[in-house]
Image (tube, rainbow, N blue to C red; front, side, top):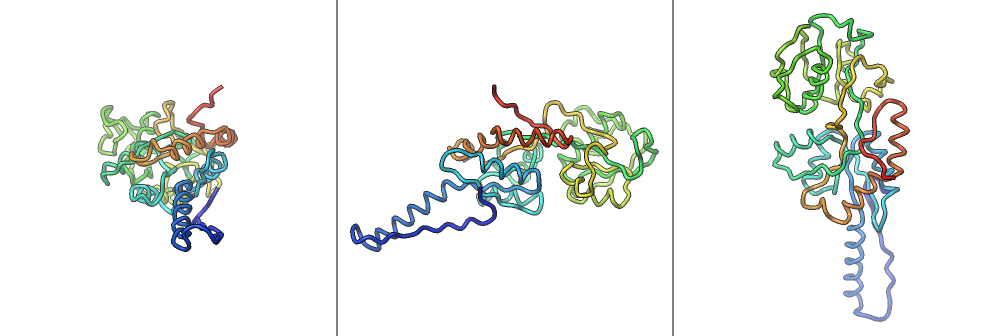
Length: 280
């Protein structure tokens, strides 16, 4: 398992036979190229996603090594993959990826759902959703797919009614009924924890982010109901490389027993659920 920048070095054995310096340099270049082809770079963001990349790297079979490329926001991992700076990424669900493809004319493909984060709404004000007052401020993600996800949770619990045709592209404009006159504020996904700390009455969040202030899904006043794993975190690659031997090996590593066991342990804490099953 490699992390960060990969520094490759080959010890050259200078022999007194063969084509001299020129053939030695060609051999070095061929060996370096061969080695580069066995290193699979995977961009990711935060735990547990980065941890899973590392576990998959330890589990991968064949001549391959996995290099974790850590990024600092929710844009870089897709841009890096689209620009062929990495070979895959592991940081998003399929609806988010599809929006990126539409906006950037991308060719990214979701290969394998790995886990479904248990998302919901948290409140620094109310102990239960029954205490929610009319006119409360609700912080929801600013990006389209997570906005829809947040609104669908509110719809599931009867706090709003969405246009049934809106589906996974739902926005506040698709709210047909808002009996509590909730006031919606769009906030970048990475800043939603700050909104909670600032006292916003109802805040959507992921366990990955809310854990920074020692909260877990057990502290949520509303949780998502998603039996289909629509928003499962996926291993993503490019369309032109998805069937390569290296990416197939990577996919197998992400669905290995080692990854499944790790996810199963985390599921006991209520943070997530595995989105694949191990074969008997």
